Length: 56
Image (cartoon, rainbow, N blue to C red; front, side):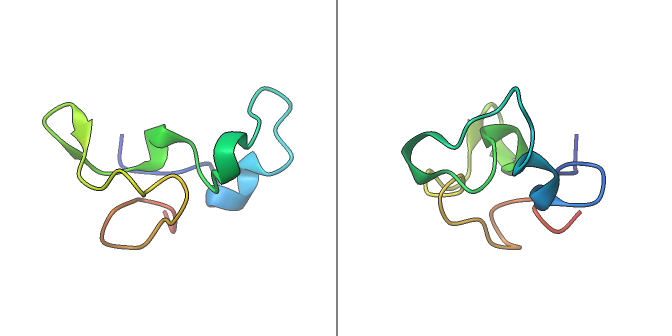
């Protein structure tokens, strides 16, 4: 999947089934992968266009 929410990562801010653990801005599912792992482990806390799909 190459997206993060319906309209963007802000969709998760009010989601009842996702909590911002450890300061996460986006769920790990929004992060770009290299095989099966995130290309950048800081992605959930610091999403950028190069490490995530947070703007899609």
